[in-house]
Image (spheres, helix red, strand yellow):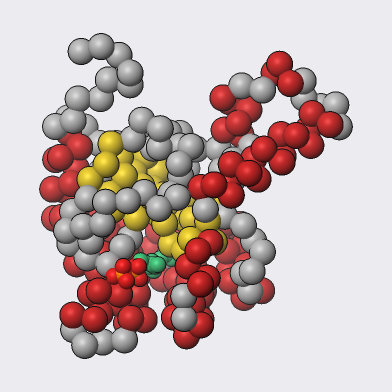
Length: 236
Ligand code: FPP
């Protein structure tokens, strides 16, 4: 592990659960269940076997509320189960869990499970798991602008003092920039995922559906990342 280059901050857009289920003649919700089971294995692998410090997951976008009510209800129940019990191994691994997104439209049971998870893990130091839930990158920038404007209006911040650091501190979470983003299932879109934090991220778009995206697939994507020449705007 010591001599291998890993991204410091990895983002995963967990796509293809629905298609995975459809190909097996199953209800879409069972694809999400299979995705959630895979996610736990993948996270345990990441935090045990790699030096990746921060993982950001796209769990539910603000737009996902437009899906069929049964699917949304199933996903919300799945989140509660995950946060209350299945994430136990992650919590025990000394990983701090944080959330990004708007609280509005989320039910009391989901909010309680999120708050308990945040509270249980707030002193953990080995890694960070950022779960984007009811999240939109555009709304994150809007909400940041409102917070910063408020500070200017109440006199605690001068306009001249608005720096990149101030912007970062006023996003949902103050995290390092994304180094690498993986979107599974072959779709080649960013779909509003952490648009500010991914300004210099590398991307990989493996064809595998998320429920089948295991540690071996992850290592293949990480090999692709290692081949990239990251110049951050510098000349070659
Ligand atoms: C996209 O696949 C996936 C989602 C909208 C949900 C992702 C959620 C999980 C994997 C559950 C666990 C998550 C956490 C972080 C608690 P899709 O439904 O768009 O698939 P399709 O494009 O094939 O229809």
